[in-house]
Length: 148
Image 1 (cartoon, rainbow, N blue to C red):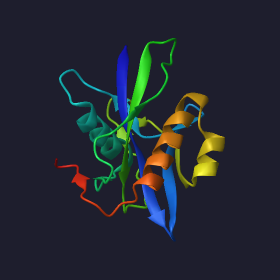
Image 2: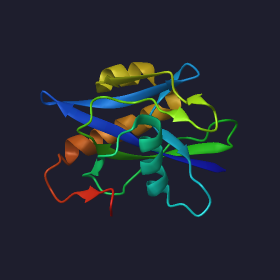
Image 3: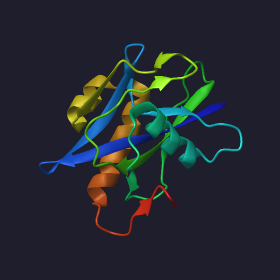
């Protein structure tokens, strides 16, 4: 089974959490991509966020915990999502050198309810897990930054 790794990127504004969603082929999801051979999944997730969005200030307040999606693409693939906060609001949908164009055609910062209305069913348990994690352990303790 192919493993993708990504980050449920959150940003706090006016006391409310917003989630970053990217759209590709008409589907909304979080930044993610294939874990390369020998690559640590968390490192892959951080790399994919920067490659796809330009965001490079992720703070993993909640540690290296993750939630995996149900298998998709006929059971051939699954996605692993970590949770991290960013202070970056502007997203740059970067060109993928292999494709010659960005992988995604749109992004949005949305609240939980908006995200639930936009995401595919396989991703909804992951954002629900992320919301519960964020609410049960508000940032403020010891952080694990991307440098690890």
